[in-house]
Image (cartoon, rainbow, N blue to C red; front, side):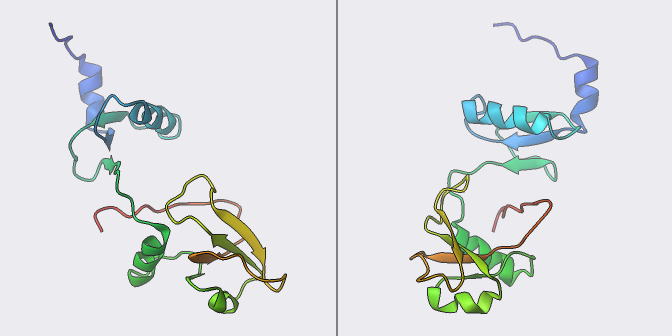
Length: 145
């Protein structure tokens, strides 16, 4: 099969591109992520199977659970909501609303139970996080430890 030649415009922009490192490159998830990112940033978003220094986001099939993530944030002085792993320590979070996280490997809000401190017994969960009122939310994803 003959390969279609790249045009000069695409080559010129490649230096300003952002790469999603994923395997397989042609997966539905990789394509959906590329499309979503392309609508949010001005750089070209390209899919690849190798890391490009400083311009890559690597998709992993083995993410950290939320408890490990919060512990790493804490040990590296990354600002994040207060957390605890025992209902006995909820009072130490110094907030009226706590999110009990019954699933530590979930996404899209699955496993989150809102608990108002003092309203009965807290939900049983492996992780509790302080609620922080916000106008915007920014997320940090741990990469390579």
